Amino acid sequence: MSTESNTANPSGAAPSVHITPEMVKSYRRSRLARLRLTPEVLSRQLEQFDAGSLREFALTADALPRRDDRIAVAWPKRCKAVSRRGYVIQINDGLEDATKARAELHQAALKYAYDNCTAAHALDLNKRGGWRLLARQMMEALGVQYAVHELVFQPRLVDGRPQMTFTAHHVPLWFFENSTGRLRFLREQYALEGQPMADNEWLVTVADEALMQPLAIARCFKQMSLVDWLAYSEKFGMPGLLGKTGAQKDSPAWAAMQEAVADFGQEWAAVCSTNDTIDLVEAAGGQNMPYPTLVDRMDRAIVSICVGGDLSTMSQQGDAVGALPQAEAAEAFEEDDALMIEESVRQISRFIIRELFDEEPLAYLQIVIPKAKDATVTKAKIEILVDRGVPVGADWARQELGVPAPADGEAVLQASAAAAPGSGFGVPGFGTQLSALNPQLSSTFAAANAAEGALGTLFRDRALVALSDAQRERAAPLLERVAALKRADTPAAYAAALRKLQADLPKLAAPILADPVLAKAIELTLGPAFASGLASASTPNATQR
Picture (cartoon, rainbow, N blue to C red):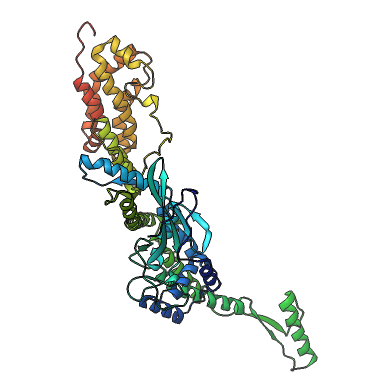
């Protein structure tokens, strides 16, 4: 275990134990990458990588996102997606009440550890950050299958309670070899065999694939096409000139033609006799050249490998896959990437809890990934359940909507006064006045108040998207009558409008009930809120009428 007490400077990063300044200087001086890739060079690098010699291809993979225009855009987009998400520390499911108190202590300890962790780069100490930088560095495993961090744990005493956090130094893959099927650390730059790595000193993030391999292949073919295209442009970008004359060679007329061709090439102006001509000679090709097609094909392959579909800026031409499939693929990739990081950091969580509590962890880190496709549906379901008194877990709702819990002391949003139950459509005391005027209308008032809220939900609900204009016209009278309740300026006027609506309800509902699609839409939104209130209201007596 690498540990360092950092009580004196709790905000500083712990120095690396294994990477010395001399090693950094040596590696930076010799950090060469062959980006003029040829199929032969790349094939040799990939064979060495598969055999466990990681250095050459790791250097190439490190340089690709900084040198290729498409990879420079698409690759960071994939790697940074998860790091932008927040995280929560969850308590294990199914714990008994006697164990939950211990689980809450574990939860607090892990929250402190990850909130105060430091991420750095072994070869560039200017790169320093917290959890987000650590997540981005771990995502590099998608490129070369492994991302390695040296861990230095830092015990601390906070408010009289032992706590622990850590510094993670990202060590590039060319510091390691994998000839035995397990990564080993190379202390010497060109050593063939490395040293074993202790589990609690190193964090190794492992991906299922190494995407930099197909990206390097695409870059190789793209580069070959670009080089040929550039050579073609240098040689044939400007048309050749061919002077034709009937004069004898080396005669004064011949020399004059030569001078005219030279002047025409420089100034685009020349004088010759009517028997002489200057023709432009252009190489065949033009629109039929293969280079643009090959370059475009490789660019699209690069983007597809990184994010699963075309970037939105590439989706307007050619055989673009489109932005919508890209968004769907990005969501699936993001969930998988988050799981990869969560599984890797459990090693850190396990060590911290064992050191602080001498037991297995009862909590874990979870990255919050909102489900964009289902957010609207989930929100509607939550609102319906809450409106009808069905308990909904706050932690579950936050996870489904991708909203992390507020931090300690953080200001929280409050419900609008106009939307508060029983507020009388934003008029303070309206419900109380109405109840005093006619107590038997109080339950009907509550139902109509809920119906007015459901009216807004009606137009947001997906059930009405497919309605025709004619169906909307049939529903309009009922919706207008409900909306008119909001315009009542006194409790007496509200009560009168409510009674009239109750009397006219069968007539207003008849056109709606005759259309099954429309009836279903109303049933899903406005109907339950309004009808249940009317059913529970008492019938006013004759005196009150």
